[in-house]
Length: 82
Image 1 (spheres, rainbow, N blue to C red):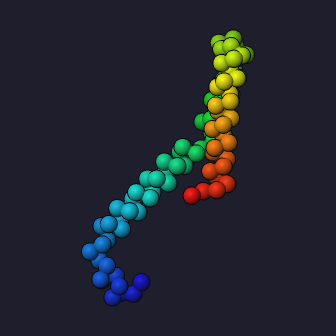
Image 2 (cartoon, rainbow, N blue to C red):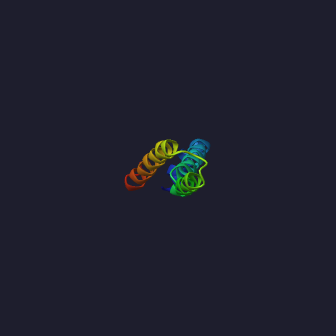
Image 3 (cartoon, rainbow, N blue to C red):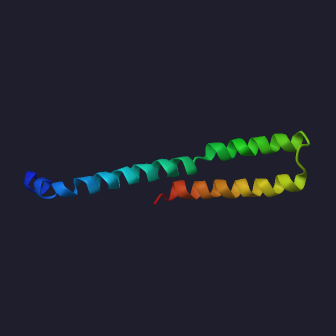
């Protein structure tokens, strides 16, 4: 951008700044939501709970399927980011 263009669009600077902030917040939220770490930790905890007899096989299978679906969603997002 040239100096003239910057001067003409100066009144829009707060809007561009707010847009940038929104983009950063969205990016941070997506990074947190699509982090596989917590899901993998929960899978490990789930297996420990099953081995300790704290949950039954049916509960384990149901929750494991949910977590594996979530990991698939994360993998898909990371391969094809928006």
